[in-house]
Image (cartoon, rainbow, N blue to C red; front, side, top):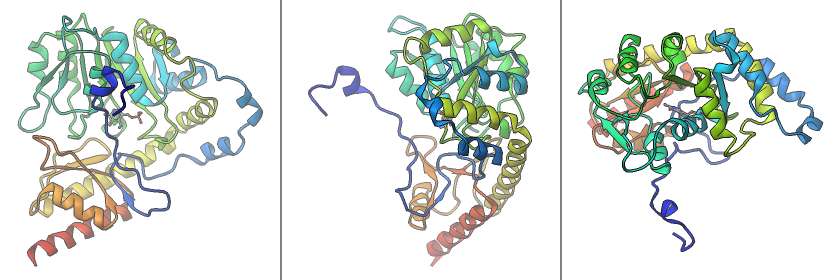
Length: 361
Ligand code: PMP
């Protein structure tokens, strides 16, 4: 605390990212939903051939080449695509661009359990939130989202940390219930579900879909996120970007990202492997008595059978395996476990068995 902090800095409760290992520390890192496989060799080639001279110049402001590549794979036109420094930044810009601030404004509707950055952005930008409780089985309560009045809607699909997917028919019901406000669908994990609301874009001008290269494209360290929506929504995001930082995506990130997007077969092969491992490990944990809802992401939301989630989290950490634990009401009995390589996940299972044996002993 410093006497120079303003009221916002004093009062904000910042987002807490998953623990990062210290340099040189060897751990199995299953706590921040990264991809265990590297990006394609073509990405490495680009990095090895970076023209240092070009870095003397500012990058193109709108990430045009990335938008063109994304437009091709996503089946939209480049004017419908916005790029930012990770989808976190794109989400932050979206909150500023589309949701009204102030005590009098209609609240933004979000699930009570979802990506924990949403309440932080809401606080930062003075946007009132109305948290709609998930159903008992952790699914999003679609009818409550439809009947509640609000100044916009934001949710992740599949949702995090629950890993559960909402059908497109239900996404569409929410879009129809809020025709005058933006419905932001955060699709950070959509590649692992095979379902995307982008197919609804031609029908709904109020739909904004965000995505990221951090998970499916193995580029969390690069920071490239995007939004897809009606051209007027994209123009709104550009207005916010150009009121904050005109160059959010650097030159290296732009050239790497455009190649990584072109390498779609590589990406989809890694996604396929991760989904196969995910389904195998979900079954293996269920066979050990754990409760594991069906995941459509690259992580499992899993509740241990014998010990508390907090205890298992701590014991795994002692064994050099990092998973995520949220000490929050409703989800304190669950761990969020990122899907790593098959070998890493087998080590996790062996550690889970050891921990269970220790409990019995
Ligand atoms: N949305 C959700 C639901 C997430 O879990 C994450 C990753 N923490 C993000 C968005 C942000 O991802 P990035 O900024 O790496 O694109």
